[in-house]
Amino acid sequence: MNVPSDPVAAHAFVAPERVAVIDGDVCTSYAALNAEVNRLANGLRDLGLRAGERLVWCAPNSRQVLVTMHACRKVGLVAIPLAYRLTASEMEFVVADSGASILVADADQAPLLPTATHRIVFGGVHAGWTGWDALLAAASGDEPPAPDQDALGAAMMYTSGTTGRPKGAVRSRTDRALLGAMLAELRFPGGESEVHLTTGPLYHAGPNAFALITHLTGGTVVVMRRFDAAEWVTLVQRHRVTSTFSTPTHMKRVVGLPGLDEADFSSLRSLIVNAAPVPYALKEEIVARLGDGFLFEVYGSSELGIDTVLRPEDQLRKPGSCGRPYGGIELKIVGDDGRERPPGEEGDLYVRTALAIDGYRGDAQLAEIEGGWKSVGDIAYLDDEGYLYICDRRDDLVITGGMNVYPAEVEAVLHAHPDVQDAAVLGVPDDEWGQRVHAVVQAWPDREIDVDALAAFAASRLAGYKRPRSWEVRAELPRTESGKLLKRLLRPG
Image (cartoon, rainbow, N blue to C red; front, top):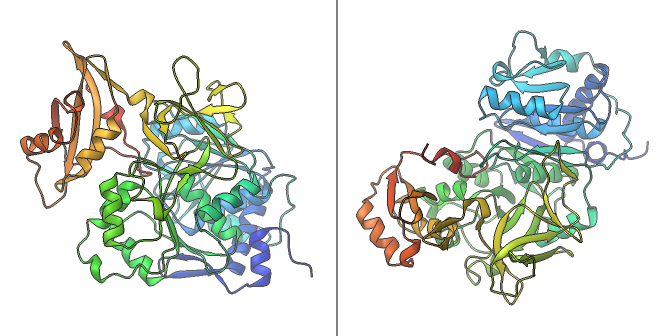
């Protein structure tokens, strides 16, 4: 018998007993994973679904989520992750906008989801939904007919909706050469020695992609259902984790734990951080408390993929940078006059990359200029070595008394204060200045924030016009589970 062409099926053929998924105390081999994937894939085909149709899945991280992702890939369905922390009305919008004909969810999320032609539930039962076990039991475990498309499959990721309604970013193919260059840059070789921990939710582009890549190259995925800092430390040590994709918020909670001096992180090869700027103070803490030589920061987006990489050796050498492009990706800084800006001058960041999405579903358009340069609305600059520095999103820019203030710069200062666990800076209306800089902060659980002391701390590190003029202390800041601040929920009115 010839080795199957599908990567997961090939690993099941060559090394059937190799562990593919660790979910709690349950280890699933590649043979068992591939069999479950085939039964779901064939079950979906038995329902009449064919390549190109859309499937929405909604659940915390689990083996079943990974099986759903692979089944969609095998039969060419467009997989659409749905964030389970959305409200029922937000979920209804995404499902309706996506045009999905089938929903797959766990029993906790099923009651929140709208109707669809087909609905499959796992981890329990729900009226009107087909049970996962029953569907798979009636389906064949043979390899389904392969669709005529890229082996990585099509996907549609909905943006986080941090400033408004989420948009469906459609990607039908992946440039394999550029993907290989990215993995080499991140020291992510994959293969049977790779043990990847799902720190973030699989509905987010980064964790989703790296979990799939781990399986496509034959590694092991360790599932963390929902992030917990202490569990993260335990799982890294117990399973000798080699890689993970995280957010600054996750890592700040990890380095805030007591007892890390006794923990062993020597197995880590790639700790990839993304989704928001990584404060320099946090990088110092990660290196001091977890170790050096494995921290990578990347700049990227659902729309444009990963565009730059800052290697471990540059983390403290290039404070504020998120790295350089790789594999032929190009960056350009463009001013308001449409002209390219030289090193050191700020402007709109445009990227030219083969990892860009096809486009958004519907009428929304990705900002683009002649020559295939695309932008997601970030303001940035490049230094004379080609390293990228993100100032902020253009939508978040605060203009006070005619001066531009980038909230990310102020937030980085606030994050450096030992009492501050989280911080958000935004502009609020002001009769005199047009806008004033407003800070919302969250204390560590065992500490309190003295606003006057924090204001003095900021004043010693920021120019006068950048300093917050008003303050608010909250028990928790609203963030998506992928780590992005929901500033629209902090704005007055």
